Image 1 (cartoon, helix red, strand yellow):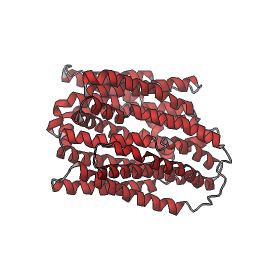
Image 2 (tube, helix red, strand yellow):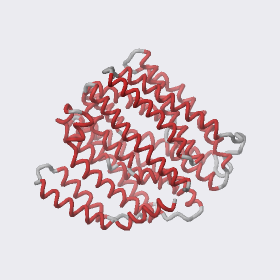
Image 3 (cartoon, rainbow, N blue to C red):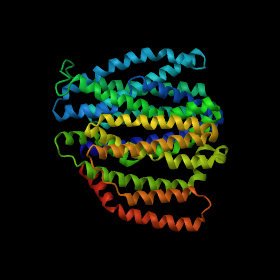
Image 4 (cartoon, one colour):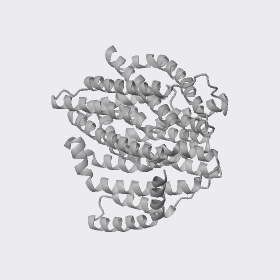
Length: 468
């Protein structure tokens, strides 16, 4: 079995485990905490996520591109020096960002715990990215992630059984799980990086090329967090209270897990380095790949929508408890809009393939739109306003990316009939007053028609998996 196929299977299993363990741990936490405490718990992590932007985030796309170039040029010995070259700047940022955590309205011990979680969580993400991109061995990430999250799940079960779940203990146990992951990633880093660190890094690209590309990637990362859920949580806390943050946080959990588990996203992330190498050699069919990926994305998103709306009441009661049922429409709207992010993740690696760094700046347009819509909609529509603001911003971002890629001469082939059918089915589901039997007949017919139109893309997708 090839390395890429192994990586795909490891990625599928890892994300499946994270989705299942995440649902279980979230269900136990949300049922144990009040809506306000659950909101406060999510507010803390929203704060940590936003601060992590300033710790030189946005390196994923940079590693995808420049490590792939080194691999294409058979310069494997230059990869570890590149990783350590960038790491020293991140360590400096960790020191400089510490004073920001002193502004949290908690006692000093909790502030220090939050800071340590921030450092370990961010450095684990960096080690994961650098390990995978430089060794192309997803099993290294698999081991570190699984052990850390399994430990976290065990802690949650113990606290739940003893009725001891509270924010303070959750922070302590999460810190312990991140420490365990850090030890594993550090072990593999020291084991696999027995390479001459004096190797010349910038032989096939200059420092200017590296930092210019990173600047665009970083600015995009900065803006992306503005259209992420973190900024919504902070703004809801500013306009209202932790209770609204709790409702919002619960509503976006299901679509976030669905998006992260989409096979197209997993396969695209796994193949990103391979695609860049093929592009460097002039043997990458951009138009065909993006066409089939988008069709598969439409189909998978539609299956997710049908399953969700069929079992939404039961699902929300099972995961979150009866106290969240009055907010069912908020959950439905969040699922419908936030799953669009899967298309954003599908498009992003193709920007890396073509090296279109300036495309990242389009994120700022949607980020500015999100801030404006949040200020306009949250005071009037509460939690629903935050969901609408971010959902529409993501859709606008996707449209801008498609327009930009076409403008750069990468004529994207999109099946617009599939897109119309998809939007029609989504609209039918959101209108609750349509007769159930009529709704079932219409949606079944449209789905089968969409399925038939996507047969060629399904065949292409499975051929791609079998080839790797």
